[in-house]
Image (cartoon, rainbow, N blue to C red):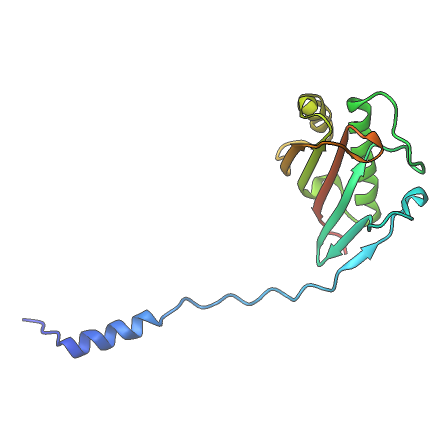
Length: 160
């Protein structure tokens, strides 16, 4: 038995396959309007930024430094104590909005001296465990209040 395919039939079959697509999954729900949260720390309420912004289930935490809670003053001792305090400040903010350190998916680390990257990492590993959040770290020419580090994070809020 011999199969004969005519050029017109082949072109018609090819044209119908070109426009063929897999079924499209349903679109995710449209995320809610952004919610802007003022600082819970009264010393920071006059600053020109939100402590956090939530869009849908994504919580974006503004850059935090190792300040003493309630004061515009850094904890003493340099990179180690400041790193612990900044991560503690972030933990408190996350919990205020229904998340935890385990919900963090991305951190950006600013260091006044990139040479202190190792010292920061030692503290970071005390707070975060594998699998670690995605992360960027960079040196800066100066941070607010003379801070040694500033950290901003994004987390996924899973509580309702």
